[in-house]
Amino acid sequence: MTDTRRVRPFVFGLVLATLVVAFVGVQVWRDRVYGEPAPGDSVLYVRSGEALRRLSLSFSPLLADVYWVRAVQYYGGTRLSASTTRRYDLLYPLLDITTSLDPRFNIAYRFGSIFLAENYPGGAGRPDLAITLLEKGFRANPARWQYLQDIGFVYYWWMGDYRQAGEWFTKAADVPGAPWWLRSLAAVTLAQGGDRQSSRRLWQALRETADNDWLRNNANLRLAQLDALDGIDQLTMVVRDFAARTGTIPASWDALVRAALLKGIPLDPTGVPYVLDAGTGEVTLAVESHLNPLPVGSRADRSAR
Image (tube, rainbow, N blue to C red):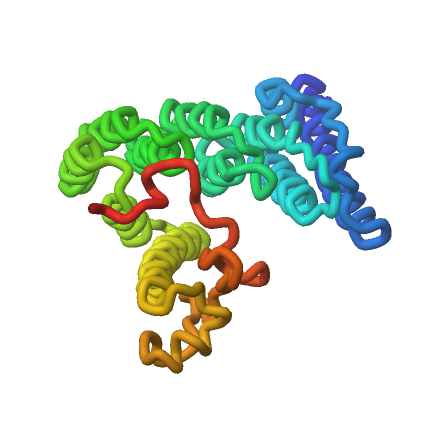
């Protein structure tokens, strides 16, 4: 006679697996037929990742993948939305569920924290939630010093709190196996925090230790933004020099080229020409430049003096 005590768990697991696969299939079909859901209309019916983890049994990593895809779609859909009132309300709950279902989901912690910390409207503008997510990641993976380093970056780049940034770099350095240069990074941050050269050192360090292309590309973007800020500073000095010589603001870059102050039309690090305001002499990035928006509002947008 069949032992029902063994059959029932097996049947339950089989049914659950079928439901998970069906859910994924329906979601893929729905996205193909109807497109991405409107961010403003998104609803999250289950907010407890722990409850989902208990229900999904051994299928929690698969379900975590599903929720991660939804988090990325939600972030991307909101970021690209034409709405003037973009809302990222469900971003943290989706990331929280993803990482509860799979506490070792490294990409969800590291990418997700950037999605959360990025200034609004390009991101949620919630560095506090980015820190909460990374702290959760470190509790689940105490050997991952990268999460503590990332918290330092959040404090440095998005919050402008250089004392806290330096302290978190020190905490990261205390984790067994962490690289020696984290202590140097902490010291530089605490001593010089906020100047552009310090920012460049931090992003170079992140690029060199990134464990995937997305993080490396993000670090390259930040470094290019810093190079663009340097370029704007240099061009602003050229414009002022021209104005001091002639008593007028140059009407275009051509005027500076004719005056032998420039060799040609100046380009930003992505190859797009800088914009010169003939009325004020202000130098900015072109609207179409992929480096927009540049970091502002902290000492990270200023040259080291």
